[in-house]
Length: 164
Image 1 (cartoon, helix red, strand yellow):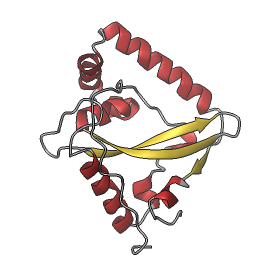
Image 2 (cartoon, one colour):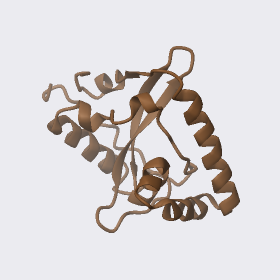
Image 3 (tube, one colour):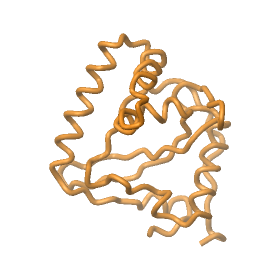
């Protein structure tokens, strides 16, 4: 519903307080994302408002990409009792942070080293610390991927988008 579409709170001022972590979505959720679930119009509106709310800077490292400043990333909460993957917000990430978040995809694309280097820089970690974090994320992914997850997109209603 275009008329009831809510804007995000644009008073948010990003600061580099978050750690850059790997987020590996359960296998049952591969290929499911807002861009594929929403109309192009709704997706474009959401992502552009996310960029604007973050002043077109990465919400983790405050950086920007060369080709385009930021990309829109979905933040999920996982309920391990009900196996529900709930969308809780969108954030703006520079392409390098976004690549690290989706480390499995970075590996497939042959960009593993760039993602590791960026995580080392942003978090002040050694390569060993990054690799330990990746191993922990992979263990969590294996546990989550043993189950079929349900997507909860009810957050969309808070920004005036009909849940598909």
